[in-house]
Length: 143
Length: 143
Length: 143
Length: 143
Image 1 (tube, chains in turn green, orange, yellow, purple):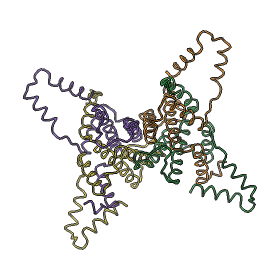
Image 2 (tube, chains in turn blue, red, orange, yellow):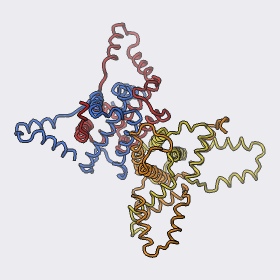
Image 3 (cartoon, helix red, strand yellow):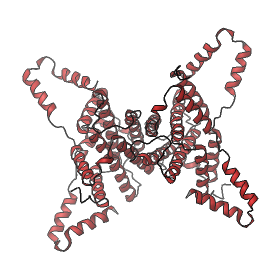
Image 4 (cartoon, chains in turn yellow, brown, cyan, purple):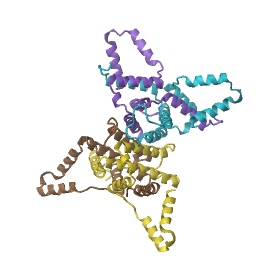
């Protein structure tokens, strides 16, 4: 469904003038490795809320409860499956896509919640990993 | 407590030879804006688990339940406070630091869960924001 | 919708032979105070699962994740409302009914989870209240 | 730990005058099947809060977040165990007791949340089971 939406948007943007050159260009873009930083995400979500006049809804506890709601939706994907193997070997492609969406929803509310609270999540996470690495020293046999 | 740990580590690394030059250098580093991308985070967490022989514990449902545990700890910070204002104007510094740690814990398990499931979270999140922007067009009065 | 369903069932059960006497009887029953114990609930849910051959799905972690899913749905009801007053003075009747259903869903999975784990929830809860009353002695000014 | 507390309380109540007759009486009481209804639970929790002047903290969203906190603690018990068998055959007695406490904590906040919202949980749950039994008719092969 998501791909359909994106496809429709692309079609409406491009319509008649699309050429095989343009098509190659788009495909290349899709195949590029996508990455995004925590600060970029926070900025995108702030712009998103501003552009929709949604800032008034984004109080800390509203965002927290919205995140708990998404954690619930994420759990529903796993609830009747018994133990699930790494890499989800027997899952339908549509279930994996659904999973990607629910993971994203949790992330989006989490990043927004941190930002609204004035917490620098990139800094806090970097600190937490360092703290954990001191608390749990690496197994010398593994390195 | 976290700062103490970091401080101790720095001290043990540097001990006697620290000079005012080196001190300036470290301070500069601290003042740099820290950012981290979702793919960098996933890689760090994979290395972290490998170095501790923890990969055997990182099944999808184990990580999901660990994340739910951290969401619980995050909720406990907000539970008896009534409505909380943006920016947490009246919070103790130590409570904000605690909040940063719990937000980070949720993030770390979320990123690890996605990775173990073979989901490209950076791609999924980028797609989800695009999908949302189509589903909820911006308010023309806001732009 | 729920009331409609119940109404339909009642109709199909009673059909032609319903008399005004029977109607009065049913209405009386509806007006009686309903209560249910934890052991009655556990028994009802066991029978419910047996009658549908659902016992095979009811492993501890499946039920736990199903409960987390329902906690998410419960949170969604509260997520964009800001602080909510006791008694929900300004809520629509349909929202209250929805809330009653989501609270019930959490309870049903919780009771079933305890039962499947072999935990006597009535005993555990009675113990926990006693333990709490020792840990937090009553305020002498309140009694 | 819980048993210790209960034991201490009993001791302080009884102290010197305990006789073998009284001991038999207490033991009998312990062996009785304990059950508790949802309305009894709601009443106990209301009295508990009143006696401690805690009613001011018991707003709907405070209680909801407290419940999410307890769901997190419950999940932590299950997080690194992989699939868990019904009846918890290989669990330590102390882990089962801990589990009973966390299940109780979720229940206590859930019952209190419903009560503070003015929702009759016994009625809502009875309705929900009826609704579910209509939505999912029993498997005729099972009965």
